[in-house]
Length: 343
Picture 1 (cartoon, one colour):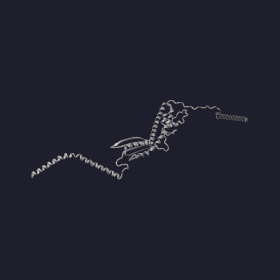
Picture 2 (spheres, one colour):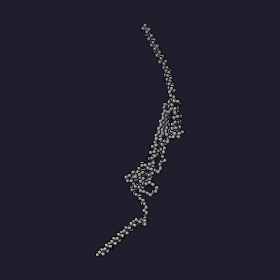
Picture 3 (cartoon, helix red, strand yellow):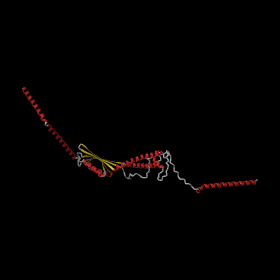
Picture 4 (cartoon, helix red, strand yellow):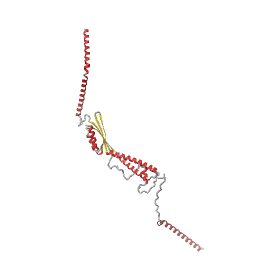
């Protein structure tokens, strides 16, 4: 019995050992097949699958994209186009917010120079001149010689005196020299006003806005190329029309500032020399003598007028005096007769 049990135990151990070896061999085969089988088996390249065109109503959500919905950003179907270098997410963000800063490839042609300033200069002169007509023509000649022009002019009369007003526009670089020439025309300068309005900051802001609008226009054009329905195309085109209108307005304001700052505006008021203003600007004792002389002339004019008035009205004296004398003589004679009768 003891031997038989020992033999059974030996067989059992042998079977268990064989089973364990078989199991280990199976595990090893499975591991080898899983780790190195990828090199032995041929691989199949799977090409990228292009998303199929969506049906109507399921294409690019242009309305949500342009309205700036950030809670659920739209997903644009990508088309194989090597020329498109910007991701769709960047296009979506710029299109949904046209006012957001953008970095375009290049700036506009009208860039402000580093040290350049946009200053609008204006001046007004009030001059007394010897001859208004001649000074009027000379103002136009000065403006033309400086490379400017006569913007407006007017001539009128105050009583017997001729007065004129001329507005000229001259290059800003010749502004001070033209003012000096205009002052030289006057016998006396009654007044001078000047003003300089610095528009540099406004000009810079307009250029930044123009760059942003042009960048938004370019991105909307890219977005228009991806639209697949009539509704989407019309929506993007409407936004493009609005953006382009703003671009034209900004360009117009930039051009206006350029023109205003390039040409200074000067308004000249001309009138004849008044009494007491001569070549040397009479003053002091000379002015008092001149005033006394004018007053004496006025007195003589008044006396002469009185004498002429008496002479003119003397012819009425005989007509009135003769009847009065006759009446007085008769009354005197009547009084004498009455006195004699009483005696």
